[in-house]
Image 1 (spheres, helix red, strand yellow):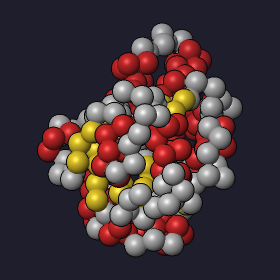
Image 2 (cartoon, helix red, strand yellow; image 1 turned 135 degrees about the vertical axis):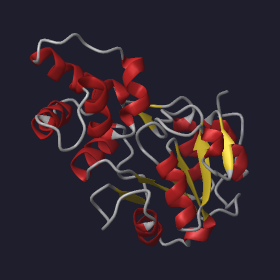
Image 3 (cartoon, helix red, strand yellow; image 1 turned 30 degrees about the vertical axis):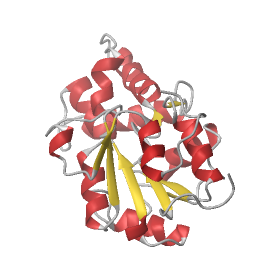
Image 4 (cartoon, one colour; image 1 turned 180 degrees about the horizontal axis):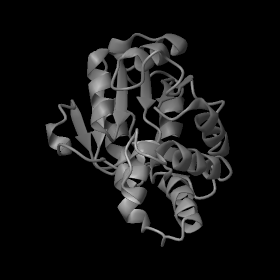
Length: 230
């Protein structure tokens, strides 16, 4: 399939918990700091739900610390230092994402990533996943004046990709993703297979669509075929 099969001009994904399962490496970085502090490692399942919130979420669960608390900055820097040394060791695309991206590209639809992760981590992760040069735009948390839930990162992504925001999908696993997408006029998709974070249930986020598997995204785009696993 080489001709346009969809009315959508572009599809943008959140990174952590939507495009890729990055929790093994982020959680591993936290557990290495816990080991340095003579504390037992935490189970990965306990860390997945806060991975979308980065160091802030990890330190809250791992050390009961919040921004401004004593040792927060120092422990956060150590977590990020460990993470920077193992960015794509256990990180993998979620099941079905590889096939979905192939279908999107075959249909002539542009795609990109909009994440609150800092660029110094986003770029190596995308490179490690083999996606760096396939994305039409990659916007990190420090790429725009304000991060999600502000609209600015998504507007930047659509501008770089050369598409209108109103003709784009934004797909995420956190309330902030849906708020950002709605703020810039994109159609929003919330994924139940992601980390989901803390706070209101996914059904209350106000997303235009809820999906359980990437195949449903392909169906929404009108590009589903036998390559998509279930």
